[in-house]
Length: 193
Image (cartoon, rainbow, N blue to C red; front, side):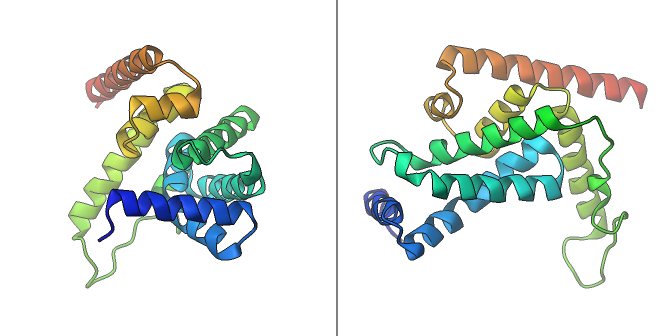
């Protein structure tokens, strides 16, 4: 297993080579960051197909704008900032609609014998995921981004500040309010159940 120093050196080399147009280095960067980019897009947009499109568009923009990236800065916040901007633009262009994404690709959840996890466990996981996605929809796009970056991507406050151009106290404050908003909606849902 590579040490953090070896990983950072390798990573910097990929960036340097990618900025020179090396396709193998570009492929390495894309494969390293595509899951994080998709995760942010999915949590912000709430729909798998749209998140896949946004993630693909983000990676294309990142590669075409790679010449503007400062290799002295961390790459992950830079690419996630592009992802967040792409998602915010998509949210602004959206018309209100009902998402059927929670039902799965075929419009209904199906279990295939012999596959793990057990149907009950998978159903509970999907219900929790749908509930979290629903709660996220009560937040502004920026607050959705902050929650996603902090809780799912594990970025530090400083890294989130790089992505969003917010101060660390503003990030902490917005995360606090976002958690409170989500808890309030969760309690309202429980009261109506």
